[in-house]
Image (spheres, one colour):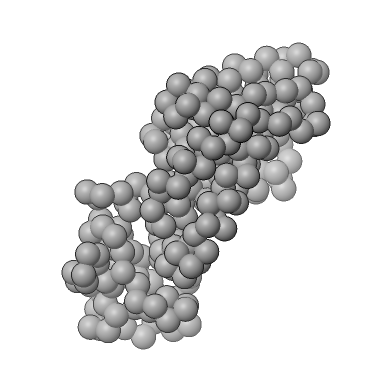
Amino acid sequence: MKRFYEKVETVAEGDGWAILLDDKSIKTPAKKMLVLPTKGLAESVVQEWQEQDDEIEPLSMPLTRYANAAIDRTSAMRNDVIEQVCAYGQGDVLCYRVDEPTDLADRQRAEWQPLLDWLSASRNIGLHSTAGIIQIDQDTTALEAVKAAVSTFDDFRLTGLHEVTTGCGSIAIGLALADGQIDCEKALRLATLEELYQMELWGEDPETTRRHEELSQAITHANQFMCLAMAGA
């Protein structure tokens, strides 16, 4: 789509901030007004629109995409989105480890267990781990604590948490990133630990590297979105 506007700005709209293109408010794909919860997020979305050239490239506007998703999808399907995120409490990738080779098992324990320990100490979510692929049943109290934690996220931050959790296969990574316990680089490393190990042994695989790069971008953009959507941003 060709760029059709000259001026982009943000203005106060109720309790939030709207984005105007040539004095006309942006609408989401579902035709709702694009109103953002913080001025910081609104200004960053404005920047995305200002940086467009003659052709508008939606893929170059991740914050706008997440904002649209928060308004059109998360707000309308909030309970479903919460359930999708909470499902990783039962099947968190950090809870499923290998017996062999021992050096990979040791690496998983060293890298993953501290995050599970933090999750237990900080949010009272005690997830059990196992070796192998047979699913283990997590304690009901832990799963209830997962739901309680996820339910505190507003629609905007929940959208970012959903992206990180599903992309990494881990509610532990998602909550740790949202809480600032880990950064984006560590989130990626934890989520791709076994594949990184395999590439150390057998060499880089272009397809795996491409997927890691895509996941890295998704984690970075989702984290930025969550941070900017926080009160005071």
